Amino acid sequence: MAAQHDRNGVPASAGGVQFAELVRDLIGTTGMSVTEFAGHAYVPRSSLYKVLAGQRIPSRDFIERLYMALEEHSALPGQELAPLIQQLIDLHHDLRRALPKPRRPAPAVHVEVLPQQTELALAFTAFLAELARREVDLYSVDWVERRWLQRYAQGDNIPSWDTLFDLFQALEKLGVENAWDLVRPLRNLATAARRARAEKRRWARVLAGGDP
Image (cartoon, rainbow, N blue to C red; front, side, top):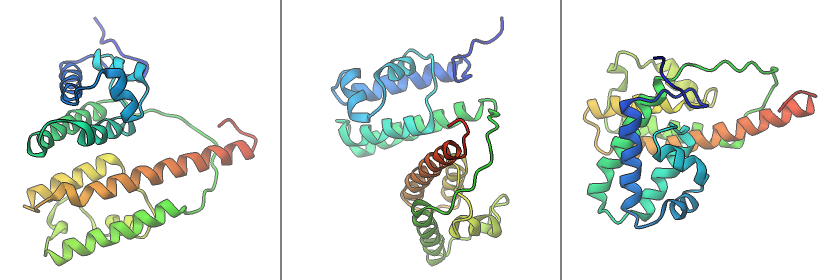
């Protein structure tokens, strides 16, 4: 029998079930109902119920809202909550990577560099400077290229969630303390920059007479 997929093309799998169970357990540590937690996390209640039923793997924005709400409202001590949230992030990362790449052609529109991108570029520059101060040789990692990182520092590109997660794992392998504390601000700024550019592109397409 062919694997069943939800509307986002997510196959039902053991990993998806494990992910759903972990989300449910973590919500349970807040003492809130699912409806209450959805409100605090600013996510649709119906979508959260689909996640808990193992029917859907949420977007990266959705999962970020979940664990930020967990960090704020969970009754677990930080040292107990942190590894569970990291497990949640790891599971979500693996499940999203297994998805087929969507093809959504859209009219080409020009969008100028936005303030959110500039803020991200400054933060990425500071991130590289901090690694240099700690004498961390990030370029010893075989897949890391100086030119590639400089494009983020210059604001030419916005790093994806997968890229930042891989970067976090590379720092951990290099023995960098508090690696997640270094990468997390970049993750938040990259999310804000992608949202801003997506919104700007939508309006640019509308103004050009296209479909938003």
